[in-house]
Length: 302
Image: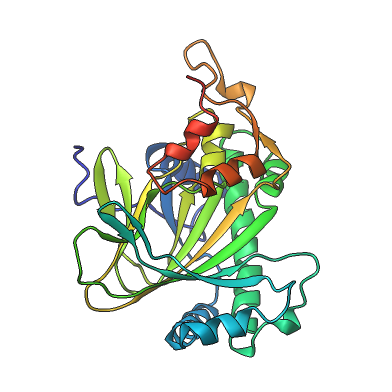
């Protein structure tokens, strides 16, 4: 076990420093943690609350009504599914409203309850994600515009509802895993539940008012040949109250091949991963149960 109990995830203020200082803080957080929180990010509180309230309303409806609302057209970008799954002694408990934009979607087909909150939140978060990835790549002395654009082309969103659970200490809202894409940005409500793994310890990511959690995903670990490592995380259910979170996932397109850049390869640090299409990596990851950072074994060089 490590000595990180009691430590907190780094917090980066996006408004109160020079760009050089900002890049340095983000670089240290990525190198030492693989996760950080951002404040003064520009997302209006009113828009955050609008989406949280819409989510609580939506998940208070009967499951069959939820399905009827979101699956009204073949090109609908919305889906709803249960995340209850038994895996030995462990259980995942959550219900998810997924938003995956597609070229043929018509936002007018989205239910009124969800349309403005989801569309407006996604648009604003996309700008925040582009800015964050730009600083991540600039801190690595890479072409920030080029790499930021490439690693935010694929954008999906998951509105997660974790019901309270008193059954067992082994009941997870979400089992330990790392995210398959490049970065994930999470908006939490006030209920604690998200934990990250660092040096063998599980550390709570305490909800902070108006803060978003930024997590490094597997594609950044592959691209940097392990210099920046994706963060393993999980969600623990609350025994008394439900929890809402909104996770925004950013990644390359499914046809993009991601492989370690030569600048991160040396005699002391040989190539750790082979190149692979992100779509193949994604399909492989989705075909397996959540299990720590095991998805990286798909392209790891033994």
